[in-house]
Image (tube, rainbow, N blue to C red):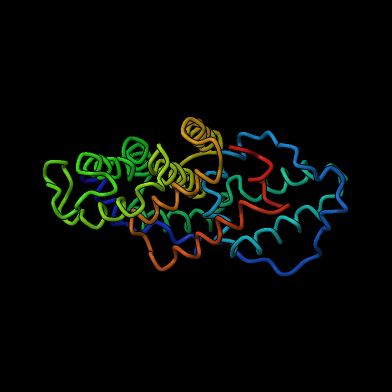
Length: 281
């Protein structure tokens, strides 16, 4: 398990901009003020909510919030049902986020290549083993060791250089991780970085579906299990994605892209076309 955890910590897993989600050309935009039913009423769709746990991957993959919202608006404009706005929004998000990597011969190749190169997942057995390891420990386990080491040595005032790494079963080189947790000591929620594990899990499931390692029924079941876990620890999307980003930074993945992903999260959590404002966690 420890070998798997340390391997996870050095794998570059966040390159969503190459997942095949393409920017859409400028299309006719729906005027929010002209849409009947555009109040702050809530949507109830647990399946969609489960996929939204990994929404930053997909929104960023489409080119960011603006391009993604253009995609949503276009989908709504093509719907001639004259349904209330939230019904149209729910439908547009469901079509866009629920299994965004549709099964096809070409997608099977692309998804399997992505899983292999990013996660060292080369077959269905690897796929489920990776998910189980991520669910059982993943990055959260390493964070908890760092947090415990800091808590027992002064918390936010701890002297990282004086901490005995061996005592806390931390590998050599963990000083940087300890320093990161110390620097952000009061930014983590009580859940730590569970959101990072959860979001990554959901994203890998969507790739596994495209790779045909899991069917739709199994994939939804796996994701809904993660939704229950998320709801257990988080009451709102802002806190969830704050922990998600802290987890991403903790993992050290593509540091140069952190600002872009923070901007994506900020944009996708706000605005009239944000399902995150209508479908609370």
